[in-house]
Image 1 (spheres, rainbow, N blue to C red):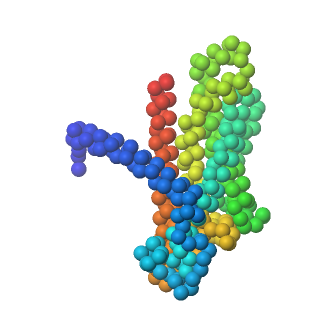
Image 2: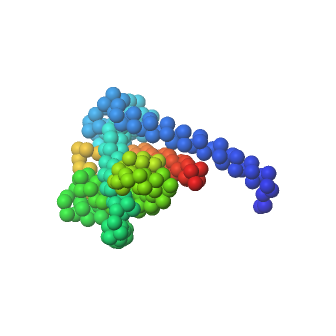
Image 3: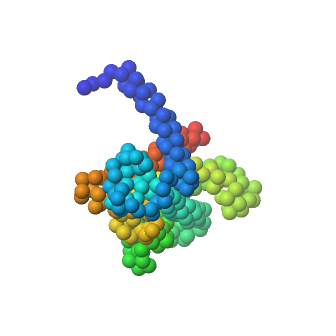
Length: 289
């Protein structure tokens, strides 16, 4: 089917109109998830570890259990609210650590001596060869199950991605006239980098961090699903899906679908915000150019 020019323009207008709606919806959803996680003790109708074999595998909408129960009678809604804490905090820790390390590596490579750039660039190239999830599983095999080792491993694995982005942007930003003018006036490279160049990279770093958060959430949920992440009695969304396998075999998948859909929607919402930030950064760079 061939579209006329007016039809193409109308499609572009509709797509542009849907964009802000999707971004606002994603922001609202994430705000609700964060508030629900913080207020879990107030919102959860039961303790997340309270079991009742008489109430096991209740479907969603059952009296007293809005989202049903799992195979041991634990309330799915309560576990979902409490599980949101670790499911959100652990990826946030990974993103913060990898961003700090990546910014340091990228700035030194871009603004430091030539030998530092070569050394750090080759090191980042080597680090790209190790898949993040495989590195996290190796850390668990060495240090044991739990969130600490995978978080450290993922932070290291994500650092080259941030470092490569920061280096590229810092080199581009360092060629602008205002940076050269500060150098001519005698200001040190470190002062110019930290005082002026780094703040201009903040929007791009925010976009990169948003995208990395989604990947970290999936990786950590995968580890918990495999039994390599959080350890009982703690739980997150990944472990909830794993513990719902008996219910799936009995034809009652609701206790697995709820946390799975929550992970999916959270990652989609974070990616939408990250893409929006990235496109905003691109427009800003073109305007400045």
